[in-house]
Length: 392
Ligand SMILES: Cc1cc2nc3c(=O)[nH]c(=O)nc-3n(C[C@H](O)[C@H](O)[C@H](O)COP(=O)(O)OP(=O)(O)OC[C@H]3O[C@@H](n4cnc5c(N)ncnc54)[C@H](O)[C@@H]3O)c2cc1C
Image (cartoon, rainbow, N blue to C red; front, side, top):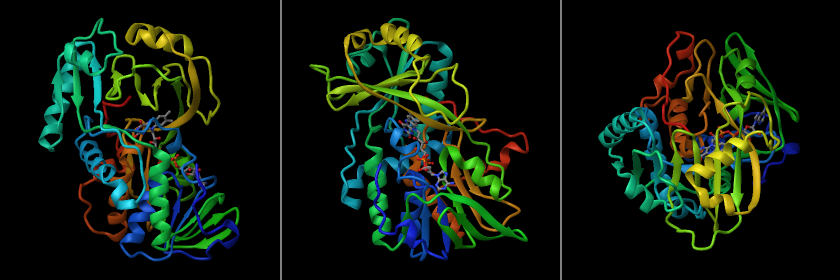
């Protein structure tokens, strides 16, 4: 979490060409791309520190291994940015391209991943099905009981979310964008279908354009403008172990697809997480023990040696879920200039770079590198869904 802004809440600009609500990875990437395209008077407000929402709670996984072709393209585009992030932004992000390894236990899972890999390869992504033996060689901590196959993509991996936020925030500021942390947006003034201003706890910012990048809080921001953004917060937890002697530094981001248990290297220990099917929606930020019995059973089964390692830290954060586990990206109809990038359902960190480009282009009304019209939030009013199957 960081406070990189030169503009304090007391110096809040009175007007802006565009106000971005939310300073997570989406907001700062959008601010950077707008400012670098020459858009002046870009203002971003965040109710807390930049990156302090879901972004800094993320496991840092970056990948192009998705089922939805739009997500494959967004993930791949972002990976290329992460690969060059240090040179582009003069910011180390500790990128480990150790690959993503999905462990598969049923014929249905295998056929889903075989199909995904065909789609990924069509888009130039290097991914492949591998044997259980090769999976064990790549990720030595796993117990292979019950596995029948695996999918691997060598250029995926993980990096540090806070550093990515810092890189974009610093670059945005250099380009003249005003990033204002600790400034909560409290409403949007709309007259005759046109946005007039964003109201904040520190005053009013006159503007004709709002971009909602408020992560799990996006539904409220949409409601202010009469735009339905069906985003629900859902708690997810992470644990980090003490150092593990002899841990293979090439251990991939390993996911047991059936249980959703995942782990990757973190310093000289392991970071791990898993979904809790009994978790209920809500803004819950505290660490809960309720998931521990299920987690322990899963670790004992899939990575038994981890049961002997001490824990160093743990935390909870929020996934920003949509009904089909796919993102909401677009510009609202029926109101002038309300854009949104939210609802990434647990894979938004890795999409930050590409989505910044896409929202810049939607704002400038030029075609983005990929058509995201199918991620329009209106898909739910027509009963249409566009499910992403490969979420963890
Ligand atoms: C445990 C966990 C693990 C995860 N692991 C991964 C992973 O490995 N890879 C991956 O890609 N994704 C992962 N994610 C998901 C990822 O963190 C999110 O999808 C992503 O960070 C969303 O970014 P964002 O900028 O949209 O939202 P956020 O980072 O939540 O930013 C939204 C910001 O809006 C601000 N805000 C909200 N309301 C207001 C308001 N009224 N006024 C002003 N500011 C406001 C908040 O303070 C916040 O900073 C994980 C999430 C969790 C919880």
